[in-house]
Image (cartoon, rainbow over all chains, first blue to last red; front, side):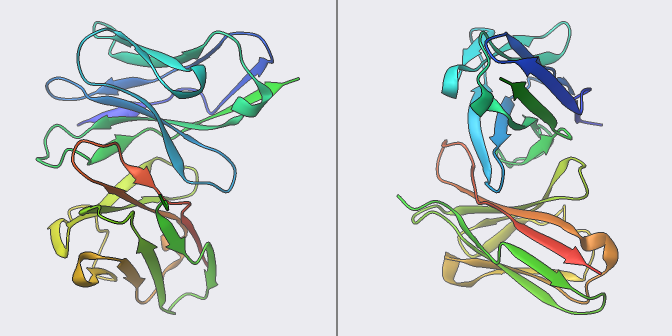
Length: 116
Length: 112
């Protein structure tokens, strides 16, 4: 079955330190991977995606993610965290068994808390 | 450009009652999706419209859920009768072409 796992419910990091939010996936065929962020009382906002090409993908707000095929991972990273990065982060993969290119399979989300 | 708009932002109803959620996609977006997040779990796909046509409703949990998209514009999602397990946040999203999904702020539904 196709799935996405975000093993950490919460990640705590001090402002200015690097952050990593982990994501692993299981999908048939080539994965199309996404990260979305949800700020309090807001909808999901697209951060970045991996379709093909360079394994390091750069996105909004200084975030980047590294695709690792052998480890089936797509971890989200940022070199220096800001307090304003505190939010709920969702990893997603396109359902490759569907014709529907926007049918996404999401993880359970990871709450990032950045402390001053 | 106005984003995806959802109404209401919150709804509290009793078990057995009916609730209708509304979504206004970004103007010009043919694709409209409903997703749901139940009690801190993963966000799950419910269904997909292209214009006024249902293309994929494989994620709809049961026949108590009815989605419509009048004239290919806004969409409604009706739950009738509501059950306790329907509580969660219902997200609407729209897209056009190869653009990423644009999500609304969601409707938080609480069934008591």
